[in-house]
Image (tube, rainbow, N blue to C red):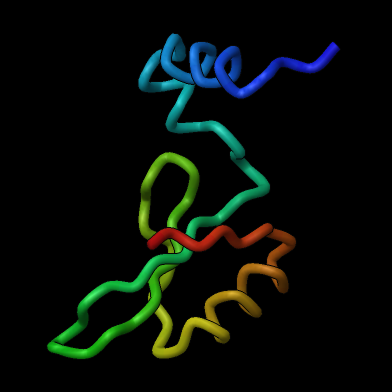
Length: 76
């Protein structure tokens, strides 16, 4: 039996900040737009929020993630 959305939400809320920070680690990387000198760039972050790298283009960040065997997830 799989948990429904409300059960999953309750489980996630009950996690410690440390456990939540490592959710998806080490196979996920979060890609989000960031401002660099007035221009939009795209940063890759580890599951715990550490910035890994910054790229000029979103597509480059996604390709770099996959080349390092990471699954990119977009953050808006």
